[in-house]
Length: 212
Image 1 (cartoon, rainbow, N blue to C red):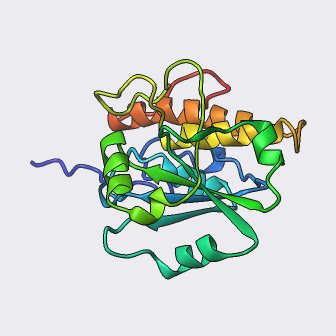
Image 2: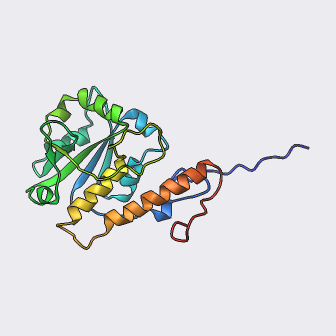
Image 3: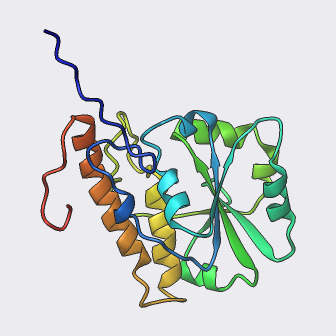
């Protein structure tokens, strides 16, 4: 007699089957806006971390990159007289992003982050003249990335969620020194890395009480 296997559906919110993290994701507010320009390949990856910035940060918007066009809503943001778009992408002329630099901007900053692998980010940049025309800043993060869900990661490169955590940390040092948004998101990130690997192995994460 054949035994019928029980089908367990994945959570529609986080995509995990045995370790839903929806209730663990903090709801955060920033004093700047964030645009994730996402490569089409990245939108289909389960390991995309930009999704967590979109779901946790009220000021985050996601647009899919296209070589031939710019979304109308994104164009409106870039052309708004009340906003200062800044591309977070290193080049020979990019400025180091610091708390003082953020505080010194007279307009509301719109950070633009290229969401994808480093190779995809370079491709998006090289094929988009409008990106090259934006002010370029870069961030300086110590240590190596904690992101362990993809192979062959290049040293010195960080995932999109880690970039968002760093931005929250920088901005809150001067404007909201008692705000712990970056710590909340960092805790979620570490928890997610653990439970994701357990989930893909087919079981619940059995960590510390803090992680459960």
